[in-house]
Amino acid sequence: MSTPDIDAREHGYFAHATSVVENGARIGPGTQIWHHAHVRADAQIGKDCTLGKGVYVDAGAIIGHRCKIQNSVSVYAGVRLDDEVFVGPSAIFTNDLRPRAANAQWTVVPTHVGSGASIGANATIVCGNDIGRHAMVAAGAVVTRPVRDHQLVAGNPAHHLGWVCWCGEVVSRDVDAPEDISCAAHRQVRREPPRVISDQVSDPEGAQ
Ligand SMILES: CC(C)(COP(=O)(O)OP(=O)(O)OC[C@H]1O[C@@H](n2cnc3c(N)ncnc32)[C@H](O)[C@@H]1OP(=O)(O)O)[C@@H](O)C(=O)NCCC(=O)NCCS
Ligand SMILES: [Zn+2]
Image (cartoon, rainbow, N blue to C red; front, side, top):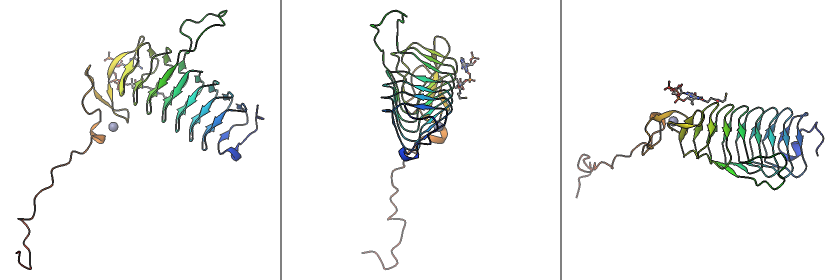
């Protein structure tokens, strides 16, 4: 285990004096690990991530690049976060579907969170329910079904509330996803076919 007062510049990441980073944890450059966080050996964290106060990253958990993990979140074994995932304060991942204190034979049920997805404060993700790319889980939601790419869900159990742009703006309240899940600001510019201008421009030298 590394000594707490590490400013691990030689590794390219920062770990606050009160954090615990176990030997064997793989952490990318530019990542910041704040007060009382604990990163276990065999955890994998990408570059330029922020881990807030009291964050716990279990052995075997995988976190991509540029993720933001807010205070008091535990990322348990079996959880894989792709790049640019946001996890709000006190959100909970589970990894045991039928927990028993005395069952040593339990199996980890994996959960995958796609790139750009956000999980609101205090939400609970029941293991095995993957969260799609750019999806948004509302504060306090209890996710008991997989969440699709760009889908917005809320409540307990979490239900469909709409579809969000990659920026988080609600684009549609329909049940079916729109063809282009982009807000007005990020809608793809549709290209006009090129105008034929040759008959509008006279050639000063005289056309042949
Ligand atoms: C869900 C959220 C993204 C808002 O989405 P929205 O579709 O714009 O929400 P609206 O305010 O238009 O409300 C739509 C409906 O959803 C409900 N709703 C909004 N947030 C909700 C939540 N967290 N849980 C349950 N229902 C919620 C509203 O009450 C409303 O219901 P109604 O139509 O029956 O009145 C937002 O409320 C939220 O939870 N954001 C996450 C905040 C967070 O955790 N941040 C972490 C960093 S601080
Ligand atoms: Zn947008």
